[in-house]
Image (cartoon, rainbow, N blue to C red; front, side, top):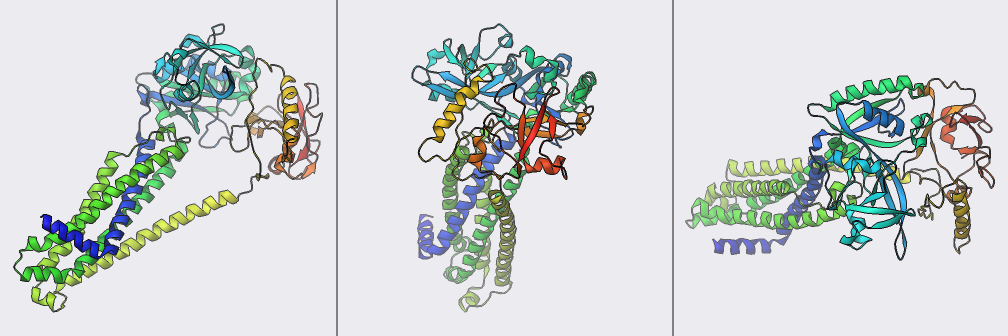
Length: 602
């Protein structure tokens, strides 16, 4: 046997093109398929790391404008009413987002902040890595401020100091007791959001949050746990009935509804279909690789008919004549599998690093053993079928016919027919894959070339967080921000500087219904929705947006609470709501108490 292995290895070295082609094709096919399939398997099928994850559900608000996905947040008053009246969902809790300044001995650190209900971690069934998580009583007004830290923030910013538990950190200027550390890579899916942050604190609703006027101030993500025996469908039926009662009590909510979705399904949300398509594509890559190797082995088997005939003529039995060809096939597939596993290991690390921000369940991704076993099984089948078949056929050919260069009856024709079939299959699969890849590239190129409506070249961004304790009044923030913007604009190489409340295409906007002057306000389903951004006058100079009509914001606009509110709108709003009408001077309600006047269109 060792002699046969050495002989097969020498034979492959004499034909390195065949050997390298087979090994590399199989290695790349197995490596790419195993890496991507491992990621898809983790993203689609891994259970959430919480107690009875199948009972966790997300609650979304829907509107006539929200479409089939309906992933709008809820307001605090609507959440409170749902929590008090729901019976099929227990532990309804909330999530909202913010940023904060943590004052350390040597520096102030800006962090991402998550506000959650005091019952949030209890509802999930999550456990602390150190200390404790939030208790239901922690969100009661009057309780001392407490916080839970993410493992990454605790390790990277605080050096993994275990003694931080029970100590206070100034968060937005307020001494806050650190009560626990979350497990590594803790995250919660919710609609299109993957909730993760540096600091988790209990939300505390103020009288303003719970006032009747706040019914339309929707900023809370809501989730809960089904009671025993309840299903998402039965919970949705109940919540829709409950919310219908809330709408009846608050006519301004007319047209709104709620939707209940399993949190496990939210784990992948809108990426499920693309992931399944990607799985189909990588499966096709593996099939193409296997077909290519099969064609190589079949072609090599046809070429070796004369060698096997000589072995048979010299008295070798059928197994002995077949063995070298079979060993060559196993060597090619064996080396290809080993290299493929190496490529897969490197691939999953890269995928975890690149995609972990969008799909945190891919952080720490490892190769799925089931995928490797499948790829290994396929490789063995390819080696056995495509190495054994020509070897068997070659060993049964009449030696005299093979040595004379004859076709050996039907045997040679069958092998050539099989080879042609494999080539046709390989070409067909490759064409399908190329067409799909071409369409994806075309779509990606379209996204890259899409005009976002402003100049993105040479534009840099930074995030500024102000402490609510120091900047509690409306004039206080501009008093800090305006001089800072002027100082940045004066730096060498800086052409202009400005600010915006939320970066376009990156952050959530402030979505609200508006009512134009003279438009009936009774039915909110007929009121258009707009996305609002608060900007300083320099923003338009930074983005170089083209003024279509009117003027841009300038000094003095919206400067004080008593200043008449003025706005600049985009051309899309004019086309949707004011087509054929001069928009300049047109007024609309953002709230029921004040008008905003359109002064410009970009």
